[in-house]
Image (cartoon, rainbow, N blue to C red; front, side, top):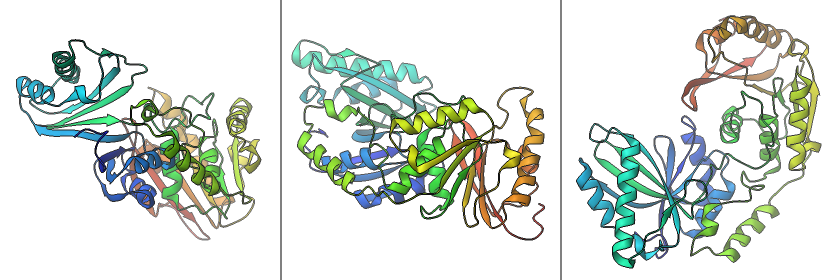
Length: 385
């Protein structure tokens, strides 16, 4: 399929594992035939749909356009089926491109080899037709290709986003343990927080959770502050259509009063969070403060408390965190009655030390780390697990 001549594009939006349902719900108002998959959602639409998903998606990572799909169980078949596609119709010899491969197959065990084979097939096909070849540019290509192989099923996509959509453009500096913006937005959406109610992150680090909450509360699209998308460099980019999508999105931004609070026990983190919020002029909607976690008390009831405490990724660190997780349970029980607390952690043993019974357990991935988002409705009574 030539992505520049088709009126209906078959697309796939990747997302952090565990956020497929949230992602499908997030983009459903903007496209057709939305279906959840593993690590993303498929959808159909035209160029305007593709632009809209790139701009609006909060939990998506890469918006991909399907080019071809076939079966192959050996390198020769892979090469010839890739080479059979008319790449020369839209990749010129003076264009640049890149390839990323993800392989889960007994037939193809080396993703680097797959990348090299696909690159050779594309270059050979274009050179055969034009007598010249395009160059590979891993950093800033005009066309970015994704290749997925699962056993003998091969799928090739054109990446319309460029760098991950999780890169909003507001984080100048981040805390070393910060989660990416797409995952942060997904946690907020999973929590069911409503913008009219208080939102608290008492371990805010560089401020990603409060900032994402403020963007959700004001209905600011995930890509509102982002400057670069790969599709802007495509030969069929329609700037008037893109400007229409952007203009319509900005007309929907709200300026309602929000009750969002972020605190941290390190002043450097609070300063970092404030700077990140100022980058997008959203700091007036968030109250950041330096505060020890043991002193945390919500200003009112009926709010959502969401935190991402450290979970001991380095050897020997887990022991040091046991007292912190015990403190989390104590503070929630004593200070946070009639609020809903959500703890995001990649350490099941540490979360047991919270000593509360979770009502719901969401299974997620933070990169390659298996994580859980645990919901603790804090109410009067005994909540010991």
